[in-house]
Length: 184
Image (cartoon, rainbow, N blue to C red):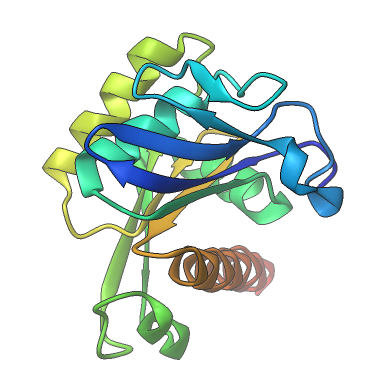
C-alpha cells in the first residue's frame, strides 16, 4: 500500500549485490529508475535515491538463505496477526490446502510457523535477530515484524511473489477463522 514495504532482488551472491526499491516511493507506480543497486553494506553503487533502513534485513535474508528475491509488505492481516500473537513468539498455520503453494510443501497437513520478531528502529540489531531466526528455523518461508509487516523470499521473484500471496491469504484466513471461533 502506498509507500509501505520494499522489494529486492539479488543480482550477485558473491559479492552480494541487490537491486532494491528506493525508500519513500509508491510501490504501485515503480519505474526502472526507482531501483537502486546496493552492496553488501547497503551502500548505493548505482542509482539515485536511498534504500530503506530495512535494506539491512534484506541483506540478512539473502546472506542466510542465498535467495533471489525478498519481498516486504505491510498488510492489515500481517499487522493484526503479528500484534495478536507476539507474546507467543509466532503463529502456526496448518491444515490449509494453500500451504502447498509454499516451496517444498507437498501436503495440506504441513505446519508452517511464522515467527514474530519485535519491531525496532535499530536495524543492525534487528538484522542480527533475523539472521539468528533464519539459522535456528531453516524451514520457515517468512516472518513477521510485530505490528509492522511480513517478510518472505524465494529463489526467484515469481516464487517470492507466490509466497507473499500464499502467506497473505493464510494470515487472513487465520484472523477471520479465529474471530468466528471467538464469536461462537
